[in-house]
Image 1 (cartoon, helix red, strand yellow):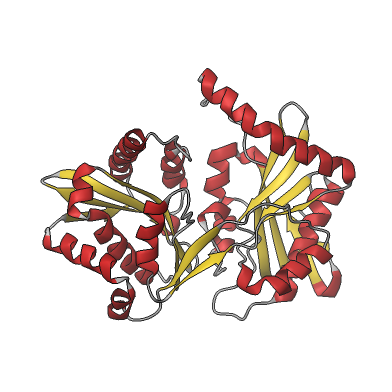
Image 2 (cartoon, rainbow, N blue to C red; image 1 turned 60 degrees about the horizontal axis):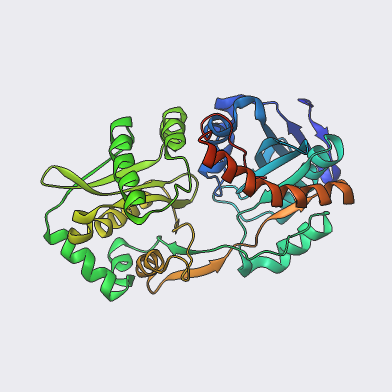
Length: 369
């Protein structure tokens, strides 16, 4: 692996695996599109520090793009992949978008991970279908393909207007529930500590048991990630208490210029006192104070989860956007790797089920490709 700058076209240079943890976090803090999935702590906890790789793109001695990749070795077929979630980062704070930096970033990533290391490269950039023509064309020209699958969609709320205007833009029924929550004189607690995270986990597990849901993410991993994140990147934990007992909770992140809703949970008491509405309102104010300009409610599905959709749509209200991600993009060294990746996509879900049934989740958990 190269730690020396690699000269590229048009005066750009690329570096791979040349930074430590503190340098990496200082680097991503320069980007408006920085997010928790690109923090060192996120992938180090999920797959181990020895399985992450870091890329920096510079122009005129200034950093203009960066990406953290998770390096995965897939069991059974022995295939290797570099997986980049919500990257590369290329939108610098308070600067116009430099599309040439994006183009050179995806080119350098392909050259290193696919051409040089012989890996499959899979990226999920933070791009939406409202600007698809420009970026889709760039990715296709740089050798990426997009699988034929349904793209995820989410709700994005512009939180730059004054706080009073934001409240007026909530849907009327949602605002009514917020008013009732405020009249209930709930105790609201916010912070970043282990104790609050532990209280939230209790609520979260109670919710999953009540609804008979399988845990979509290992909440304990996020608790460990929280302990490793620098203070400025720590997740915000919000709890509502009634009569001294927690009745609703939510966890958010405010890295970069977009806040993200990560987890939410409520119990029977919380359903009655509308605590979740108060939590969202307070979190939006926290995001604004943290320098965020937008709020990503992080996924909606009106068909499979209509309750969550209507709740989030009420927050989005008059000024939010229902928008699709541009999707996932893959890059292979040839047809054989493309075929193996397809096989891996078919095999991994079954492996996860087998591991879950056998009770081996904490020993060996296959990661997504």
